[in-house]
Structures are given as structure tokens and as C-alpha cells.
Image (cartoon, rainbow, N blue to C red):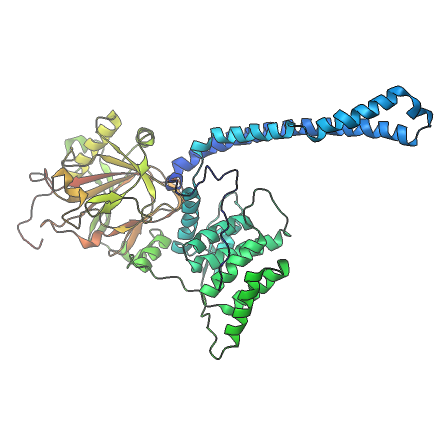
Amino acid sequence: MEPPAHVCLVSVLLSVALAPGCGGEMFTSLLSVKQAISVERKLIDSLKTYIEHELERLQDIRRFHAKVSELHTELHEGPAAAMANPLAAFTLIKRLHSEWLNVVFSNEALENAQALRSSYEEERAELPRLADLQGAARGLMRLQDVYALQVSGLASGRFRRVTDGVPTDVYLPSKAVLLSGDDCFLVGKVAYEQQDYYHSVQWLEESVRLFRGAGRRWSPENEGTLEDALDHLAFSHFKTGNVSSALSVSQELLHHDPTNGRVLKNVEEYENLLASAAPPGGGGLRRPGSTHLRTRGTYERLCRTQGSQPMHFRNPRLYCDFFTNGRPALLLRPVRREVLSLRPLVVLFHDFVTDAEAEGVKGLAQSGLRRSVVAAGEKQAAADYRISKSAWLKDSAHSVVEKLDQRISLVTGLNVKHPYGEYLQVVNYGIGGHYEPHFDHATSPSSPVFRLKTGNRVATFMIYLSSVEAGGSTAFIYANFSVPVVERAAIFWWNLHRNGEGDEDTLHAGCPVLIGDKWVANKWIHEFGQEFGERRCGLSPVE
């Protein structure tokens, strides 16, 4: 079978700004996406100016049309003496020689268009790249998978999944954002180009439905058409083994483009396959397995429940209290502590930061935000299983950072001063931003974690600097529970056993953010420097 010819995702006008190969990172941080709003405001203003100038130009053309129509009528339908008037003869010759020429070949339309394009070029550096477009599309597919959302629901602006045959709204926004046939075509096209036909079929089917409903009306901003969507959908069906649907869609495409030789050839081959003794069976769409995420089922279930695991939290040994950690500084203002798990020990400290402190930390981090990386052997690299931007803040960056370090030390009893504690890492998540199951402690002796030469990461202290409307929970995979985002709270756990071995029960994940702008601050505390504090070495090698 011959696949569809390549369809550009960008127009000629955008081709420079969205050139393939340019690295895009806007989609990895919602702050970056929000900053793009001001760019679009400028483009809208430029477009308004262009429209005003074009209306003036068209008004001049209408005036010229009215003038020449009236004069022509007088000459054509008036008395013969009218043409004998030398003034009338002169004005007719002048109009035909120069006035029509000036109107027809006027550069005003081109000048107006050039002014609009120049305004666009001025903002080019701030525009999303092709990689951003693809990353945003993959973010939607990630949300679709992890939260079991219906594509039709997403297209209608609703975050909905089917539970026991009953559609249920996971989240219902106050204002629905509808997707067009072209929007869905782009998402399906991204999946198609990655040979991910499980997703391409679903998004292209929705694209076809929406294009049909629009009555095939052409819109200048669209890249795809009904024919494009049908073309890619047919081949996607074929690649999933659904030859009968591939044939049906191809026949519909031929109705719109009856001379398309490639599609005619494909139809013939589909018919031959179906007429063969053992036609290939579709078997329905099956989501591809994951080669790197062995705990995908548990991870996604915990993300969907968003902290509602009653069997876990009914444990009578879990408790809440006012905690001072034996510190005089906390006697008058103890911390509200909630023990979420005993194995591993996971503690939530409520109201750990104030609103002003949270906003201050976010503000300090904004200029330093860069694409988050993960350990890749001895180096660090960006990865699709971690979508966010992060920045590192020294305690000397601002008094608010120093105060947080002091407060973390008070409640944990640990030495968090650099290099015994890493600098505060501030993270802002992007579109469908997440961090798939991972350990915070190093699992390889070549890990960059050991560059500080203060041992492994013994503990994690993570502060929730913002709230989210849906999603974004912290899921502990082997411990089988998840914690929803609690604004201004902080979560703490030990990564290592007392013997220095990694605690496998701390495998955890940052679930994709469904709705909201998630900010966290991480403080990773190392083994060395804790010898006389809260985390002394155990006497037993198995402790």
C-alpha cells in the first residue's frame, strides 16, 4: 500500500518560524505557554491594522467602481451628443489608459500584506516551533491515555471517560474549548508520523467527523482538509489490520478525488486482500505496549484515582498531629503533620509555605527555567517521560530561599546546607506535564547525583507551590497510593534505608497535569553531613 504524500503542518508564511529541526521547549512549561499570550495580542493588533487598511483600500475601489459605472452609463445610455463632448472623450481615454491601470496594478494590497508579514517576523523569535506543536499534541495523547479520556469528549471541550459503559466527566471546565477538524487532524498527523496508528485512527476519525459536519467549508487558517484526513485515516486503518475500514474510507476519498491514481491502486489491493482466502483481521484497536514503563497499569490507575485509595488510608496506624520535632523554634508554631504512609514513610506537612513565599520562589525561578533533564548514564538529557522546566536557586539568591532551607532543616532534623543538600530546584510543568515512575536516589554508581561527593540522595522534600484543578498527583507505585496536589503543603520521604541501600518502595511519579499550572520546589538531601543528626547509620546491615 502507498501511504499519503507528506502534508506540511505549517503554511508557507510560517515555514521559517516553524522550520523542522528547530528545538521547541515552549510546551514543556505552562509559564512559557502563558507568555505566548502577549505575542498573540501583538499579532491580533497587527491583523486589526491590516483589516482597517484593507477596508480603506476596498472603500476606495468601491468609490472608483461607483464613479466609472455612473460615467459609463451616461456615455452608453445617454444622448449621442454626450460622446461628442471633448471633455467626456478625454476622461474616458484617461480612465482606460491610467486610472484602470492604477487600480488594477495597485501595490497597496501588497504593501498592506507586507506590513502584516513584517509584524509577524518581528515576533518570530517568540513563536512556538514545530517541536512545540508536536509536543503539545503528544501531551493531549498522554492525557487521553493516562486518564482514559474519549477523543470525542476532548474535541467537544470535555474531559470525559467511560466507566462501566457510562460516560463520566473527569473534569468539566467552566468554558469549553472546542477543537476543529483541523485541530484533530494535526494531532492525528503527529501520531501518524510516529507510526502510532492506535492514536492516529482515533484522532483522524474525529477529524473526518468534524470536517464532514463543517460542510467542507474552506478556512484560510487550516492546514488539513477532509481529503487529507481521509487519506491518512485509510492508511492508519490498514496498518492496524482493519482492511475493510481502509477500503471504505478510501472509497469515500475517491468520491472527492476520483482521479487519484495512488488511492485507486490502494482500493484495488484492499479488495484483493479482502477477497483472499484468509483476509487479515482487524481485531479492534489495541494500545501498544510500553517497552520502558513496566508499571504502566498501576501508574495510570493511581493517577486516575487522584489520592482516593480508601484501603490504604484506612490504616489505623496513620495519623495527623502538630509536630515540633523537639525544636524550640517550632514550639509556638508547630507544623501540621499528616503521615500518609509507613512503608515507605511519607509525610505531608500542611501550610508549609505562605502564599507570598510561594509566589516569591516562582518569581525568582522564572528567568532561569530550562527544560528539565534526567540522568542518562554519566550525563543528563531531556526525555519525553519528563515534561517540565526547572531552575536551581541557591540559598543566597534571596532571603525567602534561605528561610525555606532553615524550615526544612527544622522539620526534618537534617543538614540541608550545600553540598549536603542540593540547591532548591523549582519546577513548572507543561502541557500534559508529567514525570513517569522513577527513583530520586541514584541507582548507578556513574549517576550525576554523586558529583557533589556527598553520597546518595537520602531524602526528598517537595513543596507544592501552586494548586491544580485536576491531575498532577504524586503516585507511589509499589506502595500503591497517590497524593493529590495540596497547595502550600510539602511532602517528605526517605529514599534510602539506614544501611544506605535504595528503598524500592519509593518508586514514584508525577502524574500528568490535566487542568492547572503546577509548580513544585524540590530539596534533595544527601547522606553525608547527617552523621550526627536525624539519619544516623543503622547498626544492622539489613535495616
